[in-house]
Image 1 (cartoon, rainbow, N blue to C red):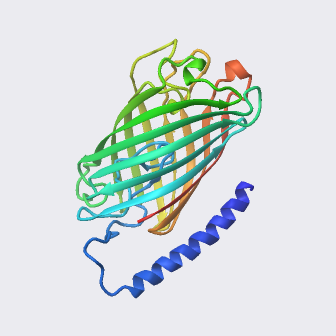
Image 2: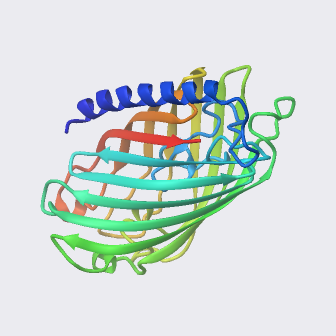
Image 3: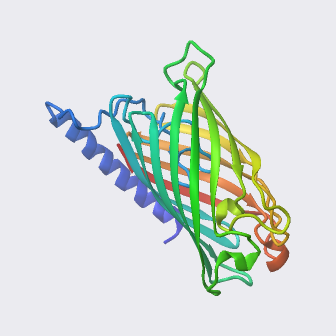
Length: 306
């Protein structure tokens, strides 16, 4: 199915689902105390990134997944597709936010070569994340310049190569098949200016987010990398923005470089969102395969939650 066909089908499904959710809300007279309160403003929980946590498409923000307030809980599931000239990435994930304080997430990534010498190669990775808000509030501290600050960790387990080659990811030069990223994010929403700004500092030894393993012949230690996002809230249903993510360069067989994207996200209701983007992932094992040195293409993410 082409991406445009999938987008049209998704739009129709979302409109039906949001209409059904609105009808259900109108029909309910009393809400059980254990039900999620959906107390946060629309779009302020961000979307699901490719590693499972709440934020932008390629970097986490300090926001907590779901629409539950500090007295409740929330959560979401998502599917993300990213296709470039020679590769594609499919991600399925789930995230739960508790008391607007703690977020737990899990994601499964499948990275596949779709052309060139590696055509048919698949790489799989599982990611388990935790994020804790430690200070501030991105929305309600409007009288202060203090951002919302969260610390997080993502444990990544690369389950190896399949298809064209069946082997652990260390066959590509990585030193380890597992690793943990640690990060701190600061997010501020300026409601009067309709702007969101985020800065994340990540300690990592992951190659291509861990899809090519951890550590390598050039470096085998943690390095601090910068990530940033800037978004404009067009109205309560639409958000547009840009993101940038620095990457370590640990492998001589992979001229790894920064990721960046430009995105637009649509929030028809609190239960659903769609994110479309142009993403550039830079070089991916180009010295070995001779593939395009700038892997770029379409990004589509679908999220459902409460």
